[in-house]
Each structure stands twice: as C-alpha cells, then as structure tokens.
Image (cartoon, rainbow, N blue to C red; front, top):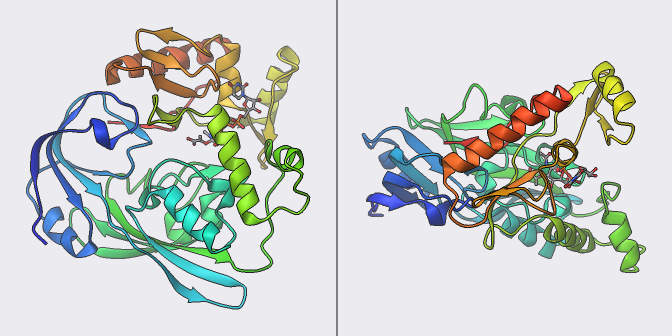
Length: 338
Ligand code: EPU
C-alpha cells in the first residue's frame, strides 16, 4: 500500500489532552507489512502514537510520528472453557472489550471504557476496579524501531508491574506493538466485584447474579460518573501513579491523618490514593487559565480549552511540590510527557 507521509501535521486530533502541537512528519500505519518501510525512513526521532490518551506534548515533535492503526480481532485458539484472542495494536481498547463482551468471554469486563489502544495496554499495564491487564495477557508481537526486527514477548519478557512494563523502562520507545494475545474464559469465569462501587451498583440495579455484561455496564457507569470524557474536556486519565510506601511511613501519616485511605500491597508496603493527597492539599477543582484539576476527581488534570502543554506541566509540577511539602511523598507521573 502507498504510504502517505504528511508534513507539519497538527497532533490535536491524535491525543486527548487538547494541547496544540505539531509533528514535523506524520504517517499512519494500518498493516504490519507496511512497518519495515516506515521504520526504514530516515526521519528521526520516531514516536509511536496509539490513542494518545496517556501522553501530552509540551512542544512540537521534531521527527516522525507513527500513528498505529493496525486492526483485526480474531480467535487464535480455544479449549472447552478458554479462548485466546488476538487483536491488532491499533484497535481502540474499549472496542476490543465490547467485542469480548458480545461473545460473553470473561476477563476484560472490569477494564471497560479505559481510553487508549490495544497496543498501549501492555506498555503501561492498564488496570481498573481490581483487575490489571497482565492477568489476561498471553503474548505480544512487536517490531524493533531501529532494526525492524519482529519479536515476540511473553509475560516474563514484559516484566509487568503496577502501571509498568519493560516498555516503560529498558525498552522505552524501542518497540511498536503490532498485536496482542489475551486469554479469556468462555465458561466458569470468576467475576471480580469487590473493588469500589461495582457491587453497590449491581445491588441498586437489582442484579443478584450478574453477567459479564452487567459488570461491564456497572464499570462504564462508575467511570462516566467520575472521570471526564476526553471528547468533551481534555485529559489523560490519572495523571500520577498512586504512591507505594513502607508500612512504617504510612503509620506515621496515619497518626497525623486518621482518615487516610490505603490498600496493603504486600512486602510490608501500602498504596495511598494520590487523589486523596491532592484533594487534601486543596487542589480539587483548582483552575488557572485553562489548566486545572477535575472537580469530580482530583487525580485527573484537565485542559478546559486552550491550556498549553507547558501550562499543564507547570500545574503538575506545582501539585507535585505541594504534596512533597505537606506529606513528604514524591508523586510519580503516570502520563508520558513529550
Ligand atoms: N479519592 C479522593 N478524592 C478524589 C477521588 C478519589 O480522595 O477526588 C480517594 C477516595 O478515597 C477513593 C480513592 O481515592 O476511594 C480511590 O479513587 P478511585 O477508585 O477513583 O481510584 P484511583 O486510585 O484514583 C485508580 C487508577 C484508575 C482506575 C481506578 C479504578 C491509578 C493511577 N489509577 O485510580 O486508572 O480507573 O483506580 O480502578 O492507579 C488511569 O490509570 O488513567 C486510571 C483512570
């Protein structure tokens, strides 16, 4: 297929934060076969873009942006109660979730409505409502950005952690994920209902024996009630990771802030919601110009219209500094800054 290389392309339609930025060069790839030619182009640096829902631009991008639009969803293997589904890296994540729910395959229902693409899911090990992506992950195919070599990664290769993988560490920016295989349940699927308000919503809806679709519907309802729709207000979901700390440090905080929420995460460690810290520090609903903190969820930074990437970055830095000053905790960004 003939490839269209565009110049000075606005990136506004290709990321969810709504900040102005341009790519010096831009190309969309919709088939794995076209990749070697694109990766062989001399323009550099190269940046892979999925749904653009977990990054923001503080300046124009001087090299080649490659928009991953590789599609296709198919069953690769199945047994009596399990199935392995392969999806193209450019598929919209929620479209894959809906495809599996229509087939009544269990595993992705708690991950409904997470913005972004299939190819980005393993990179940041997306997670929500008690389920992390790596629990369903089987294998992925990726191409090395410099050599064009096609490589398969299994679970161990990916080194998954909380919102983390080898693709955010040692292999950052080094691979483009072209397809992902996940293992789902056709029968005997165990639903995860304990996190957040899922059970409460099912009770309110009078559903004592929920289906996979009921759980997905509940998650969609929770997310739409407290997280802003990027089509309406620019944002990239949670801006910071929830910090993990030693139990002793947490005990010290608890004596000062008896209401502090937390979750034990093993190895004598605790995770604290960054949203709580940010709200306590008074930032929830804050707005300066068009850069702000969402009024219904303090972990989401929003662009009310024409905030620049630099302004969003300044706000994030001010929040980070204040959390350090008040609580002695260093927040780590979850969103990639370009
Ligand atoms: N909270 C506040 N103020 C707020 C919002 C929340 O104090 O404005 C406190 C409450 O105590 C609440 C707790 O924070 O119980 C946790 O809030 P929530 O359940 O909304 O989850 P989160 O920890 O803020 C994480 C993920 C989300 C995911 C939700 C649900 C991270 C960085 N974020 O958020 O993922 O949807 O759990 O599972 O782990 C994303 O990564 O972009 C994302 C949206």
